[in-house]
Image: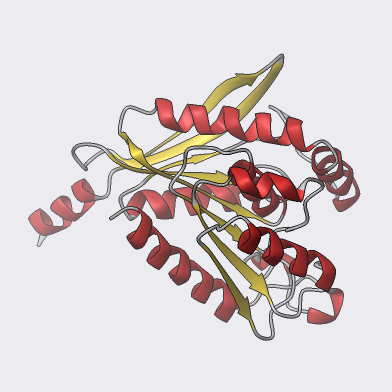
Length: 251
């Protein structure tokens, strides 16, 4: 029994580490996780945080992905030590980058480069996922023409100040969206769908009934009337949709 337990622990030796990196003059602090008991290269997954910045939530998602056999790297869009203390601060920071899409793209591209620098990453099998603000960010990564296999947006903003940039998308796109999310207008949703169709993108949009914004975030509470709330069913279903998507793009 002890030998079997030791073998199980060996198979799940998750290595985690904070990683400082640069974008221009800015110092950023990301987080990498992988199973160092697995031999050889494996797919890499970039994770982009929600509006509160890089938190334990994204790190736990990275560790979960590491258990599944991926190298996961959490991006830091805001900068080392810059972590909002309130939703007001978070709104201002997220708004800053959403209003400067080129800077946002440069920040996420810098994180993608760090992921690709990890020795265990299979360069031909790389994807990006993001939550809320991070969902917006990975869609922008795709619009920048980044060489990734796919992106997954969980309740992210889908609006674009430059819809023509959809022509740059080379990867597959999966959007997991709360059907009752009040923060995504019908016009923005229609514009996004038009952008995908017009540019021949291989895309999927899944809407989860009864789910509002932030449906993967336990910290959002469970009161749908606030417009943002956790929904366990949608959280689990969207995670499974992501896993199926990965099975397709990483085969």
